[in-house]
Length: 210
Image 1 (cartoon, rainbow, N blue to C red):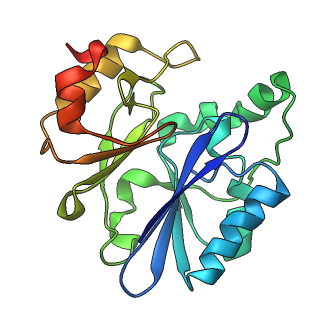
Image 2 (cartoon, rainbow, N blue to C red):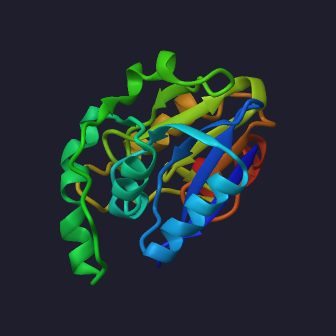
């Protein structure tokens, strides 16, 4: 089971992925308004899912608008790379600049690099470090399903922006070429914004990777 929601004015992709027994993981909960947060909650209830964790590909504000609500609603652990802590803490400031409300999450955040054993069967991601968009960016890879949740590292025909603090374009291209492109070409890439693509499509046509 895989569901994508497009949330907040930046059209961020929030994903819910489940296993055959109804356990699920929520990736990058960007639901900004109460209405968006309720849409996510209604889907989980309608599908009779049991959230087990929230995973963050990175700490930018548009990917965590709904984190407080989701973490409190389901009482699940939150995981993020420790190198994105400063990015995470700066989210309130970025949201304010855009005139967007933001309820900060102040609960515990576990180390995403060490979360694999705590994830349910069928959802034990390989956590791949892909610094560049931020220094703590990660991609979440399920080799058995040919799926990768790639956050804002790579998009269809594009790559993530690097003009925010901690961004490094050359580093990001190196991360993509080292850690993503060698994977099977049929691997579906599920980005933090926009439509999905595959590794094969990006190798052939992404102008930033030629």
